[in-house]
Length: 194
Ligand code: HEC
Ligand code: HEC
Ligand code: HEC
Ligand code: HEC
Ligand code: HEC
Picture 1 (cartoon, rainbow, N blue to C red):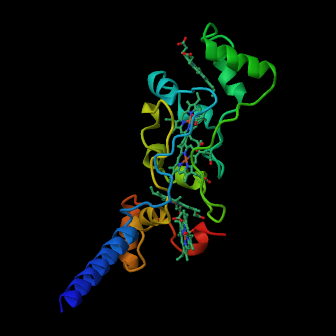
Picture 2: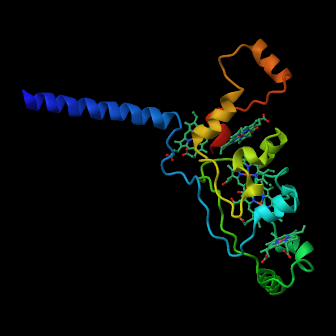
Picture 3: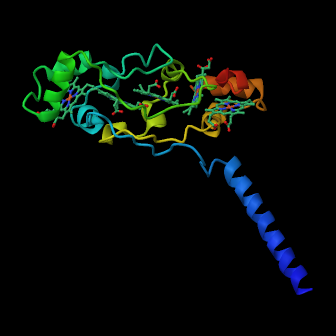
């Protein structure tokens, strides 16, 4: 009898746990296996806080392809050298940078963000839809070292795409939303998957 009660209680507990777990998982409150917060060490301690924050250099000055391409390029050394042939030349890291430039050796920057191969992402589409870098990358201009700010899960992508686009709303309401300046994005699988 006692055994049955204990067994029942344990079973119920497990079931409840499972329900809560599935709830958390499907509502994006858990990000198992995602690299949120990933912050690799870079070969040169390049600071966004200094360059983009303190000196106010525009993101697009360095990430030049972000408006036109799927990828937002990481700058080549030429861009650094626009300044560092003459700026900070007494500093140890700048001398290293200049040596690498002279030797024609690119810097092996470590990638921070990486989606799986089966996912299509496109910077240009988002920038042209007036999405801000900070929405997806966080306050980069305050980061000494860049880290992954969002979990980049499918739920995260789809939530935003669905945010202003829902198949259940009427054509009329959709028109109103559009006129109100709302952007919308498709949520069919082939939008994001090969
Ligand atoms: C528009 C000008 C500009 C560009 C472009 C630029 N920097 Fe700088 N950077 C600066 C200035 C200004 C400082 C501060 C120098 C100082 O404190 O004497 C600095 C400082 C640094 C420092 C810190 C030096 C130290 O030891 O204090 C590093 C490292 C650095 N930059 C790397 C880079 C790299 C790598 C790039 C290219 C991806 C780059 N910078 C592009 C202007 C620039
Ligand atoms: C002076 C050049 C420069 C400016 C200005 C700059 N960046 Fe960067 N950015 C870099 C370099 C170099 C790297 C690669 C090294 C690193 O991750 O720190 C990088 C890396 C990144 C990454 C990580 C890329 C990856 O590997 O996944 C993001 C995101 C990013 N920058 C966003 C921004 C945003 C947003 C701004 C404006 C607020 C900005 N950057 C301004 C030079 C710059
Ligand atoms: C809608 C979200 C979103 C916006 C807005 C966005 N990014 Fe990204 N960014 C991402 C994702 C997702 C990745 C990873 C892409 C991959 O692995 O294919 C990424 C990767 C990057 C990278 C690494 C190189 C690459 O393309 O893989 C850089 C650099 C970067 N972003 C800079 C920027 C800058 C600068 C802006 C603003 C001008 C910006 N991003 C706006 C989501 C965004
Ligand atoms: C902050 C909101 C937001 C987030 C987060 C976001 N998107 Fe988008 N996405 C949009 C908007 C808005 C558009 C533009 C729709 C248009 O122009 O019709 C778009 C467009 C796209 C397109 C181009 C669709 C086309 O026109 O062919 C792709 C692909 C895409 N997103 C993939 C992704 C992926 C993958 C992620 C997650 C890694 C993601 N998006 C995250 C808002 C977002
Ligand atoms: C707005 C973009 C977007 C749309 C739309 C989308 N996905 Fe995804 N999907 C992603 C991203 C980003 C990932 C990788 C991150 C992750 O696994 O959560 C992913 C991962 C997956 C995975 C792999 C999960 C794993 O564990 O590796 C499958 C399977 C998948 N999606 C199926 C679908 C199907 C089926 C649809 C249509 C009903 C769909 N996706 C629509 C962005 C999207």
